[in-house]
Image 1 (cartoon, one colour):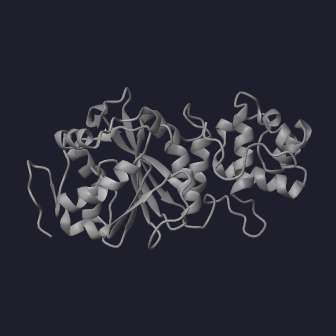
Image 2: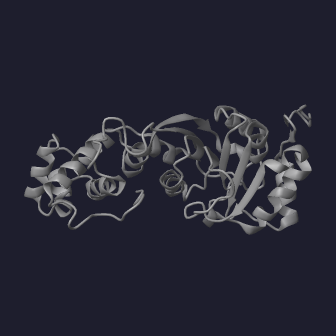
Length: 320
């Protein structure tokens, strides 16, 4: 499909949105960006082109885009992928998006499906399952959204998301680093996660007070858990491992012996389980990787005492 050149903002078959376009649309629709929804819209065509290129999309990919807003990123995604499922919480923006795509990329409009829903809770999606997540995620909901989608969309093989820089650090942090915590471990359960670049605040409207970062992930080859952390039949599941993670970081200054006492039944029980897992009870949670947490959960499962008073909730759990 031939590119349509408009003020240097061309993508094959699509006229990308610029700052003036977005402000004009917002005025027409009576939309003022809502802080409670984390609405900061990308207005720079170069940024959305860059994100679409880094996502390495193939013609047979089904992209899940969360929070498409006015469609800045949707346009280049449609040009690169076979289909885009856009999940938008704002009903006004969700209703406008198909009209925008029809006007600016008429040849690509048939590839778009819009779902009006909260991406952190959505269950049903139209058509075939999405294979790639590409999104500019709301700052206040980025981690819960990604964990929910990874937990409920097994066909999601990889993703590239734009989040607040501090959140990007937490999502991709390694054991022992200052940013390492619950989000780091839980995301590592599902996928290999890495930082994929920085994004300045100047490309957004309204301009946020913080910079953003790109985070890329590739799901582990097996159905669940990290390499080296899968024990086959009888191995602990996600909820069991996440309960250990929640307990370990609920009091991150405490040693694992103390932090896991409630989960295990007592401090003595925690020490016994930790030693059975080959983990020093004097360590803190921030020094362990997801494989070690999986071993602790397995040892607790085999011990039979742990988990009688579980810490945390099932599923993705807290994201502090």
